[in-house]
Length: 349
Ligand code: NCD
Image (cartoon, rainbow, N blue to C red):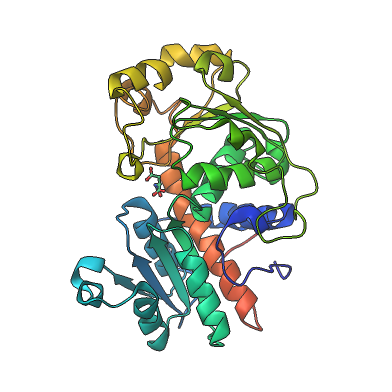
């Protein structure tokens, strides 16, 4: 854990395989902690985590707040409608107000790409100690979601040892509104880093063929990729081509709020062509888990029957894995920042 290099966590293009291994190992340990009784660890005692969600969220926000509380941090949360944002204060100035109050970690979600990065640059320039954890920015990045997806998949393939290499050579199909999805982008970095072969599938209007090159070049702003060899990315526009041989399928919400023009003829047509059902999944040739980051449009991305089938649907498992994954991120950031590692006294390895 002492090898953790990331002051801020902004996107996964900078993560090495060792970074994924560190997160999975710690998250899996946190996952085994009892959720009743004495559930708090003292690791972040005296630290202040501010959750600044400038965009709506159910899962991510409550999961981060619970994760911070489970590590004994103090938590402050912010809601745009009742804040000075409505009086014209800028996002970055609002965030810095929390830093002035002593926030150690700022978990930030914003509808515009790059806001967490800008805040991190501001804090570094000002010599502030506080760190930024991206809770989802625009279409760009949603690191904690991809990491909890990774934990869910790794545990599915090897519940006893959910390490990155259990994803090696697995065919993971991501279906749906890829172009508007920060979850898909972060998953592309994470899954290919672990050696998975990712197959993207969706209508042409939501999945340009250029996505096949998404991880081919060095990540933006970096001279070289921290991952020496990645799994492949292929693009298909028909489920009949994408699903055969799949080891897992992830489907994504249609992000209607981000569509600037009419990109789909109708939801019925979308469901007919790309909606998942028990019957459709038979194309995979074997039983496979189905993931969805939520919120789900029941009957659009998948049938209600499939969503409610605990043998297939991993949706609740993803939510369950969100808390320990976010605990791991908060822990690693706090550990990187302090001389002594935060206390893990009550976790037995
Ligand atoms: C995702 C998000 O906000 O990017 N949801 C989430 O964090 N669980 C995906 C979505 O909104 O569709």
